[in-house]
Amino acid sequence: MKTQLAIWAGKTAGTLSQIMGYGGSTIPGVVARKLDGKFLRHLRKNARSIIYITGTNGKTTTANLITHLLESSGKTVIANREGSNMVTGISATMVRNAPIIGWMMNDVAVLEVDEASLPKAVLECPPDYLILTNFFRDQLDRYGEIDILIQKMKDCLKSINVKLILNADDPFVHRFSDLRKEMIYVGLSANACRFHSYNMGESKYCPNCQRELSYSYIHFGQLGHYYCSCGFQRPQPTISAEKVFQGKKGIHLILDGEKYPTTLMGKYNAYNAIFAISVCKALGMESKAIRKGLMSYQKADGRMQEFSIGNETWKLNLVKNPAGGNVTLAEFFQSKEKKQLIFCLNDLLADGEDISWIWDIDMELANQEEVEVFIASGKRAYDVALRLKYAGIDEKKIIILTNLKQAVLYAKRMGFPAYIMATYTCLSPLVTTLTGEEEMLKKGDGYFGTFTIPFLPRHFKPLRGQRKYYLLKEAVRMEGNLSSYRRNQEP
Ligand SMILES: [Zn+2]
Image (cartoon, rainbow, N blue to C red; front, side):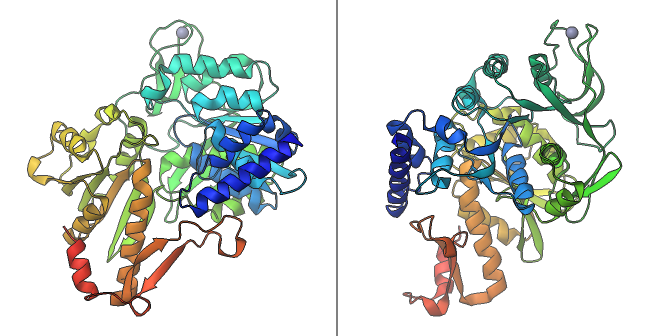
């Protein structure tokens, strides 16, 4: 009964906060936990399988992909799609999905979990499967050292019965092997594909003997085929991609001789795809169904998202740490076309308040002839500009526009495709602006802009997922004409 009350209160609080325009994706969780501290434990009994995904990079894409694959095979899935991956966010997801009366009965819960929140989440709601993607230096202001973090994560797993799905290519992740659980290793064969190489990451040393690790093959960062004279070495993967190549619509993977085409752009997504494939196989999904699901997957906003602006294809990718920044640059510079690079950096809580990580990105990679303009944008645009300058980029090419919309409009006037890397809180305004620009070009002068209705209740199903509406000229009466409005908006 207590749990039921907590759920009702959580749901009510969530709806109220939406009506008042606060959004507040974790509020239902915060309220429910206040009323019943054990409510996750109670809800836990009702999902048949719980999958956690944690690690520095690739959590959201892997979680979204697994959710899509399972749903496409007819399973009912709970997922924290909004990426609210701390314990309150997970609680909020559970509250939202719980029925008004009775217990929820779902096949699978797919939950992205923040690394630092894992011990608490495991204690309250132990998973059946845990996917560990990789560990790169990430938001040290929140975590402290990687080694301490890994030890805490390992400790919390000791006493529970869980199947681990581990990245064999990451020596950090391999440290979880000594937990002696049931394990599935995934990895990429040597020469499966060529990633743009950059400076080695932070895991150069053997966790057993502290000697420097040797590599027979490096994919990127510290990921690769590593070994040490003491015997610590990359385990033989259970599932490994022999080949990864970039097709027109996405990457293709060859696993055990079977081809898996996907809609994911960027070769570094190969790991995310293999994680998703391996957990779905473990849950009994057939290869054929997995293949079909991979082809119908639509990626989340801001993940190598493409926009058609005039005759150009613009690209937008989320960046939140040096490793992510480096793979993004490597992807961006696969094509040698004339381009402009936009780096949008905010320092709000969700982005990580410490932005010193931008100094660990190899921005020197971006110092290429084909880049005509570098635009530094976001709240910390000046820091970006300074970083670019220290990467040896000609000052005359660097433009500072803190306002994201102005940065987009400036780039649009240049007439080259723009490649945009952006931190978390820049994504949503950028996607809105870019979709607006796309629509404006498609619809001509009648188009005014997009807006989102802030208080549409989540349970109003017919309109769910369609929260963007387009205002046409005929529909709005405005003072003055639209072109003067637009002129005023430009820098
Ligand atoms: Zn060693």
